[in-house]
Image 1: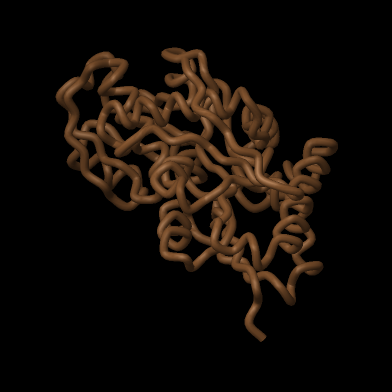
Image 2: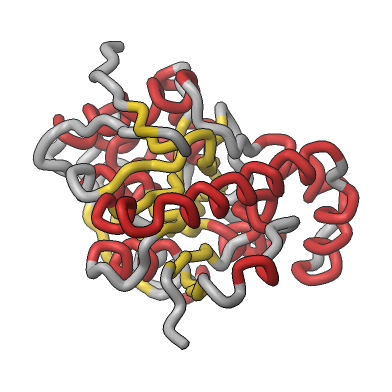
Length: 287
């Protein structure tokens, strides 16, 4: 039997609080889960192969006329993120004119790096895109950008490199939080699946609430499956925000304006939120 709703899931630990207590068995006859890295989910959502799920917030902006965002769900941070790192052979103050290798798994963070280096540092940089393997990326580049669990693993052993957290740099320059992923929903499927979408949305919010109330099972899980020290994982999840309110929206829409200013987006975007009972629209917020 063909399932009626296709839901994406990012293959990174940063979304686990939204999925950890999600009752998949409740939806197993109606939902197909598709697990991929952000860049793959971005493409699948744009091609209509996924109906709902976390995608790069940059990709949301590229398709804002086709998507809405599920209310109160994101991967955000106000300051250090702990999984978005620029690994550089020299201090960032000396990377003007450098060649930087970019991970092929991200859209939001790649463009965040370009905004930081071109708008805030006024640098000229050349870029190449590669598989997220740090030592290979640095063979012919001065610095490399990694995200997610690739970045977390690499940071543990990058003792001879200068390591910069992009969330921290963004906050230092702007004072804003940064949203890296949004749970997007294709507008075209809402009418046919409204009640199911509402149930899925409620289950995501409940998983987030339960994880926040008791993080110990989540910490035990990631410690067992991904290594590292428990204290490091506790600190990591404490720095992440999985809400999406005014604070996150203001920071994200400023990011969109910066991206449009540099020609990375054709125009600034706003975020249109969906929640059961109706859609909550948004007007442009000024800095």
